[in-house]
Length: 304
Image (tube, rainbow, N blue to C red; front, side, top):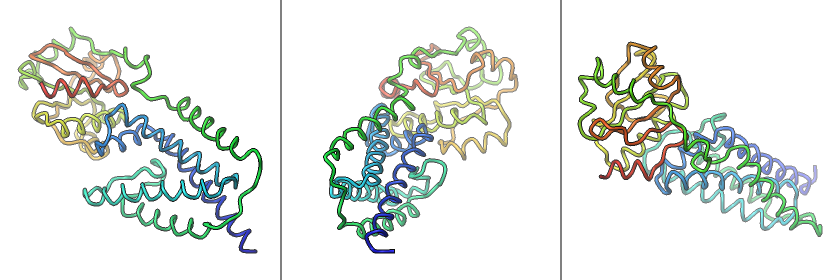
């Protein structure tokens, strides 16, 4: 195999890797959004857009590398992107994080150390293809424009941002009268949930969206300094399931209750999980599911 053919094959493989990585992030979009938000560089809403922008960039670079057009542009773009991710991983190591970096979604879980090694290897591989002749076609800029347009449309159609989707904004499942009665009966009556500001979360221990909602809420509670003893998790499931819930969700551990009357619990949340309720002296101020959590409202509630 001649050096030029070997470099071309390597370039195509790197491009395909970027495309596969982007697709796996889309498949795991909910988790990737939370990962972006967990650094608190951006608000929750803006994290939705940043996550999609990162995926679009990866798709465009992957398509560009495979097409073998505008070599310098795509090469430098790839190097800058990898350098940026490498700096983020170094910051993650500085923070002591060991969670999945979501480079390949949930399909291949890599911690920051493993992902950092992967990025250094990729940077070395890109150095091998630095000097290459690209396909000189009058359509090279058209390919770039089409790649940007197609990638953007595909990402936003396949996975539209939650807080920009009106259908989720009107989502309400809590039955107020049944909820009020629950607060006054055992085992919740002993928790003083009608006093001051309280957050009551209804979760099923095996529900993936409940786990992600718990992670979102935990990040906000820690970041905005809301007292952790004002957060209560009401679970449907088992004691073993609760332990696994905390492990899988990476949520802080709050006061929790395994609710004994499953039928009553299901009626109260209209059979839907998760339901997160913000109370002020017993009055429901906000109610959220996983997809319609509003950081601005939650921040205001926690700060006042």
